[in-house]
Image 1 (cartoon, helix red, strand yellow):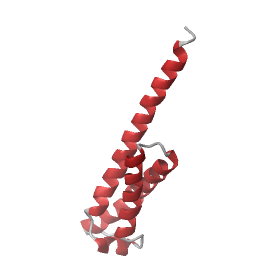
Image 2 (cartoon, rainbow, N blue to C red):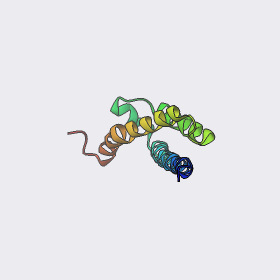
Image 3 (tube, helix red, strand yellow):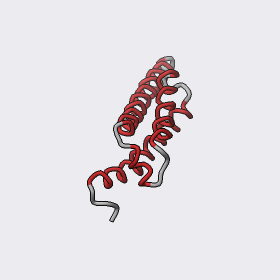
Length: 104
């Protein structure tokens, strides 16, 4: 019975790492696709980083996450953080601009 615990731990850790990898890839990919499909003028109107900078940050982190398969966890988490900042801060501003309603 005592020998089964390390095997279960390793299998559980592998499944958790795979789930974290898939979720992080999905979040980064959605943010990158959304960033690439927006007009560059909207980023300037918001006063945030230019479209190219957001695309480069998210794209490089996505590429590193894909190449290293999430083994370098700090870069994966930086990529997820950058994608979430984009999705939760920049994306609503771009949506407000494209709807024509403005910010207020």
